[in-house]
Structure formats: C-alpha cells, structure tokens
Length: 83
Image: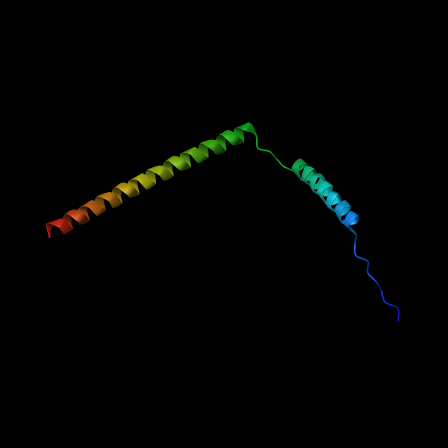
C-alpha cells in the first residue's frame, strides 16, 4: 500500500497566507462600511435631545428616591433614639 503523505505548509507559505488574510480583512471591512446607513443631522439632534431628557428624568428619580430613603432613615434613627 502506498502511504499518502500530507506535506506541512512551510514558514513562508504561512507568512504569505497571513498577509493574504490581512488584505481580505481590510477589503471586507471596506465593503461592509459601504453598506452602513448613516443618520441624518436631524436624526442625530433628535436622538441627542431624547437621551438628555431621559438622563434628566433618571437623575430626578434617583434624587427623589435618595431623599425619600434619607428621610426614612433619619426618621427611624430618631425613633430608635427616643426609645
């Protein structure tokens, strides 16, 4: 029977394939970037306003909860001291 010998790729073929892979990566990246749909200036402004409003509302909610729990804690401590 004849043995099939699979030849291992040499160092230079590995380096060549590595550089081919890098080139393919950049070609694929460029083709994908052509498919991107960028938002208009009006959409960016609208989304920015929405984010700012949501952040302000979240800050107000956190402030209200902080004040509520702070007053509750102070009330409980005052009650504990009076006992």
